[in-house]
Length: 127
Image 1 (cartoon, one colour):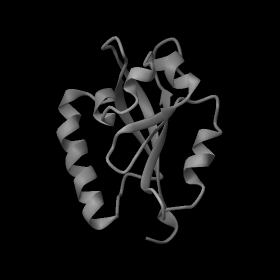
Image 2 (cartoon, one colour):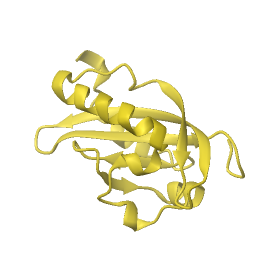
Image 3 (cartoon, one colour):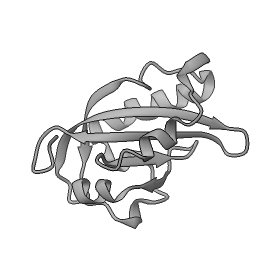
């Protein structure tokens, strides 16, 4: 695993208040997001406990779930710690191209946690 799974990686993303932030648990269920995520993508607290797939295009969900299942078996990923241009679904169904930067962190007590910043590349919040 080496430096791919850096302790403190989730907290480092969480402190980037200028970017939308979302975190899931080991099962891929949303456990937290920041105010900027609400402002840009429109989601509210009803997203808590839902699959992260809710913010992904339908055409990408199966690929995401397969990758997630593979990670659970191997604890290896080529997608973390690299910017990825993906579509993000807003609460109203609109799609915004966004740059996702995903990190993974393992805690002895709670297991894996995944977090990402999502930088909107289009629309009124583009940066």
